[in-house]
Amino acid sequence: MWNETFVEIFAPNGQSRLVTLSQALALKQKQERTQDKALGIKRKQIPLNIILLPDIPESADFCKLSHAIMNIAKFDLAPETEAQGQWMRCVQLYYQAKSILLPNKIFNLIEDPTKSGGSVHQMLPSLALQNLLIETDAEKSFYDLLKVGESVIRSWAETQGINFPFLDFQELFIYILRKRFERDLQDPIFGLAPPLPDKKTRRLYYRRWLQFLGGLHENEKVQAEYRQALMDMGWEGYPLIALEHQKSRSREFDKLWQTFIKTHRALVRLIDSTIYWKNSIPYQTERTSRKALIEPVTTEDGYIYWKWS
Image (cartoon, rainbow, N blue to C red; front, side, top):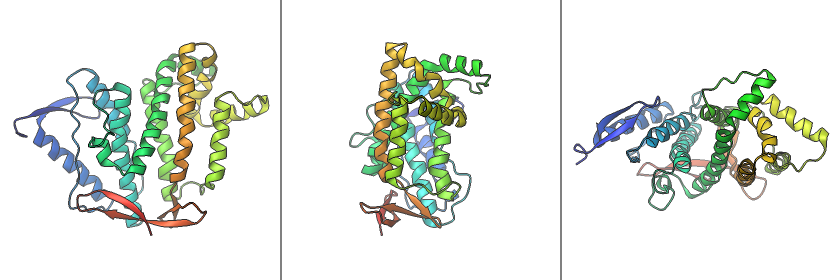
């Protein structure tokens, strides 16, 4: 049956070709083994999920975005410890799940993959799945803002004398996600960034940013400081500066902006899952301020999860 069923697979550039289902599975297995080997991971089995999309033009757009999201989770350095390699691989698997869920929230081509028995539900433990649902809601709201506001962002950049180096809003979106990945995941793992502040400080800092974006800071000096901080972030911050005042000019855009604020407010919950790194070993805080060592465990069927030591 698997040799008689043909499916269309897409390359990262959007080009497609027909292969048998067994060939598609073999290609995916080889890709996963290669990524495991690069990080020193040895698994007897590798769980695979094949996503079958409908035969419509939007499927190519779904796959293009999916490939772009999956390719974000690439690390510039090799792991220094086994635990570090295991964590890096889990990050890649998290992005694989995101590469299914986020495009589907945008294009809505398949049934909810996070339901029991769905592809994404099978890929992640419960806490990671909860985090992914919150994160993709926020990212989808940002995607919608960029899509509707692309012309405004281009016009703003032109008036500022800033080059718009992206093909379209989607390329800008992926650029921003990649920068966040480097800052929030890759850099802490390899000690390329200063140690993270405690969770209480991070929550306060994040909520103040949301107050600014929600228009709750009336002090003009404070507003100027936040706008300058966004300017200093380059193309991570430029879109928010360009779009900030659009919410008062369009009911449609105001609704998108409010959704953006609401979904990003929920992201504060992800701070509780923060991983801290010391000598290439991961730690996580419990309810107290004590940082406890966490260790990877690989199950017989190839799933990786983490437990408190």
